[in-house]
Length: 309
Length: 309
Image 1 (cartoon, rainbow over the protein chains, first blue to last red):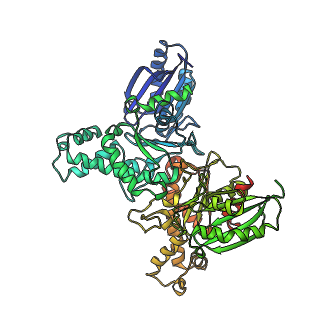
Image 2 (tube, rainbow over the protein chains, first blue to last red):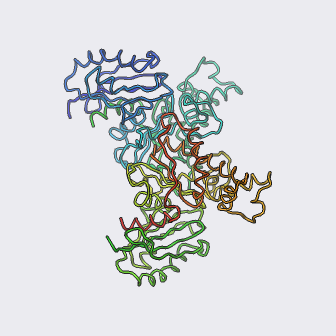
Image 3 (cartoon, chains in turn green, yellow):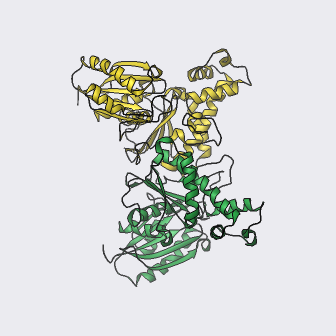
């Protein structure tokens, strides 16, 4: 497998990243687009095919393409009803890539891809049971049970983000209310900060349409609204992890994705809420860890790793 | 394995059942006690050892003892912090049985035992991903993922009953509030009926300390409070199953345990709420089925089956 290349594609609600990765996990070339540049999945597949074919001329031994996408189904190779993409309902993306580019293509959930990366390149190498939570535009999760990715009977299992944690809570892109990702995600924390902001005088009030990363910067410089927003988000996430532990009993929960870059602030709040809400039999059995792959785009590496595997 | 006998023990919050079971799953002899007859787990183990030893004289080829108990840990053989038993905190029950009786003894969660029974004797024989929910004094669950029981890293995974579904909801025996089992269980439905009863004129008002089975009888004869109580319980359970589906994507959820005897009323209410709250990608992928082993005590059969296995 040395000197082989695989192409990893990470499709998120905001960005699409494409990378040529070698067998050591080193990224040789990377390109990216805004997701909303493409109105449908087919438009994206048609646009990108000649670009990938052209770039491939620079490499020998390309094994194939691994794609991580929200609501990506490993069994069918389709993206189905992904509320955060704004694309069509069922996109046979693996099939379109095979047809347009002629390479072996596998597709999975973006968060499952991050979990593959954690398993192969990260701190979960020796763990049989763990969870990766990606805090990006939405909240994704990859769940490994007995050393295998949890796919269930449909290929869609493992969606923590759409567990309803507040009755009549915030509206979710999935059409329901109160899903975890409406609170614990980059989008969720911005909503939280805006709510807290109304009653206060924060540096955030001077930023038009501030983002999650602005909240993190503000918190680091001591801004109270930003700190409260992170603590509130950690509290919701920690309570949810306490509940999930009763289901999966993982050794560790890794936080990944953009919002997890604030881990020095969000992890203590999350741990505190987890410990206060944990069933007695599970106390002190779960670690919350920052993914060490955060700055490397675990989803992208994991997508490529699926093909190396 | 023909003509072999195993001893199954089902320990519940209310009753303890002990059975001698042959390799066809036929119960040859059965005895039972009220759980609160024993103040500690050791008291139970000491009391029952000579009775089992004496009864064993009637059989040849006894393979061992399988125990299903709340918070029973397959890895350690202990019952740990089981709020519904009122026994001591950590009970090394498998070890006590091995010492007192001298037979191979395995222990698991009572609901996992019911799931083993469904897998071996019930309608889940051909399923790789399914869930068994036991609606008894509490709510137990056994989760099978990729044809294996879900134990997680601690041996305690799969506890749906202690997922918090209502903030500041009913007090739970686990010390927290709003756990699913405080609503969806025999105990939960009695609380529900008592709450609805205050505003009405039901046949239940004539029964002192009515139980779940009284609610079911009353509902069958058209009593409105009883019907509303079952519908409310089914609604909570169906919403929770919709959420669980996003995690496990099972082919089927089997309802077992005492309250599931009311399946002709509770399943339509549960299905309705599940369908109304299901993420689009999971619609029409999950069946809610009554366990056909309800009247046979699936937990007891499953406990015995662990040893046959």
